[in-house]
Image 1: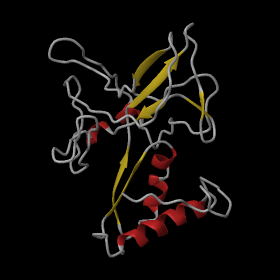
Image 2: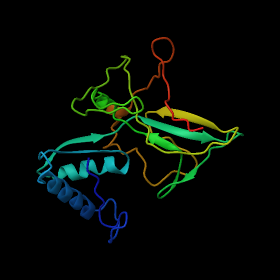
Image 3: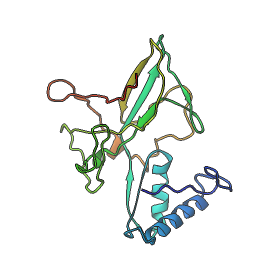
Image 4: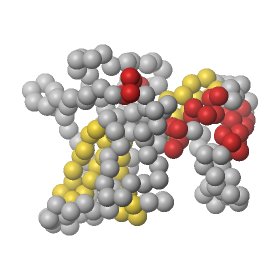
Length: 209
């Protein structure tokens, strides 16, 4: 797994212009650089959510020589914290208000790697595309990004599952409605969550007393 900071991001100098042609060209250069390193097999794939998903399509148009796969995530799992009166607790994010944490898997990449999964963490192999057939019940393990908070007495954790971005208060500057990234024909269906005997849905949390 390789994470690259582009110019103007993190502590790097330069101007951060997320949707510019220069940013896309930088992305392509990073892909081709990674593909020829001694530790690389020459095959570079892209994965992430939100802004990182929307950048996969423009960089693919440039056809970097080492790029062989893209994995934009679907399905939105949002872990929220509600106060004693039911009010939403909002935290300070990197560039906008945010909730506790999220998990955004690509459901067609739900296949697990049995040699790498942990009791507390699923590990997806990303070696097979498994489309969802309408009406068919599937099991989906979602990794929710690690975080930690202190909850006072009277506060409640809420897990919200949806096929679209969870909106609250003022919308952020990075949304997930682009028709090219999320075409209606592919993402416009209904999601059904099954519970009960043989189909238990659950949230696994660490508890530090």
